[in-house]
Image (cartoon, rainbow, N blue to C red):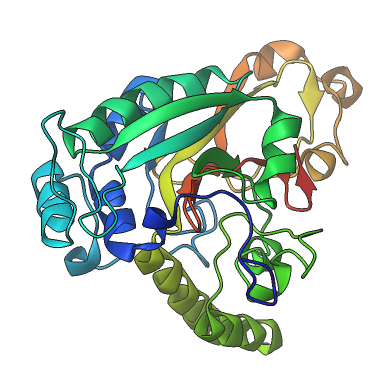
Length: 315
């Protein structure tokens, strides 16, 4: 919908049913994606903001967790009025339309293709048919605010301040009345979320802001318009025999380094030889898990897995 509430695009209206979105979320084996697509270099997704920033990250309570449970996903759809046909694909009992959705992926992304193969099988197991539509990065982003899709693959990186990433879920970033503009990713719009967004902007006390942002993430998680699949670990290696003063912080007990911005990391770097000491005492590579990124599946008039290069820049 536009910011004025006018419908637009060609998204499958069946995805407007929260039960369908919940079933999709429950039918995805996130741990397998972490293990198989990223060789274990990541963690299962849930909250909207990544664990690289523990002051903002949130995880759902056990009784709210939409973990992988295809039997439960099937029962959700059955109870919601989507019986399976002879071909195993469910239909809407009210309209007779099949639960068949377009899944847009980045044509130049190997991981998108790998994820899509898994998603296709998992969705078939719960009676949903996916048709893959490979698009260039430009085409995917151009089509996003037009609403000409059902599901899209995408992901984000974010900085230490989550304001921008939270803002793209507010009602104000929906397309204009004529369909132009728009910075939404799944056409999500909830006045309760918008109220909390304004409150967190005005909160000067970090614990108070943290509590507000956790409420916002709970709203997003329960809506299942954006389904966060996993947090990908970003690895970086540095030559300690050739450089010094690289600002990379210290690893925690799990080997994770603090979030780092390249420009800040190199602001004090200098050749190791400038110390006047032998490089033999400083030889080797430091390999650190630097920052955790988000990959998400989203649904509004559809579900979107949407990719952003930086906080303010689309790929």
